[in-house]
Image 1: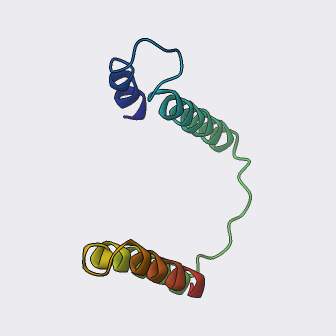
Image 2 (image 1 turned 180 degrees about the vertical axis):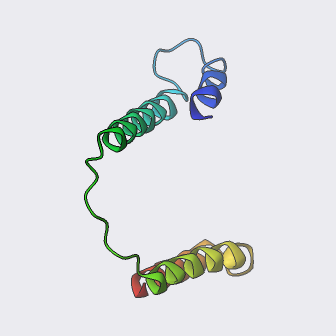
Length: 91
């Protein structure tokens, strides 16, 4: 999706080699490379044993994101992002 979207951004500014599609293309290429690397590691079975996932910290982070989305229009960017930071730090 990022490659497709970045290809549409390049049609906006064709006068320069570096434009609004440069960074999204770079990020999309990096994600594709990491995805291929993950598939290769899974194919070889060389994944290390994973630790047990702790649920409470994940819930704190999700609560922080939800608070930011809820309070962004009500309290403003600074307060909403402060809540996100506080709840994520707690997690």
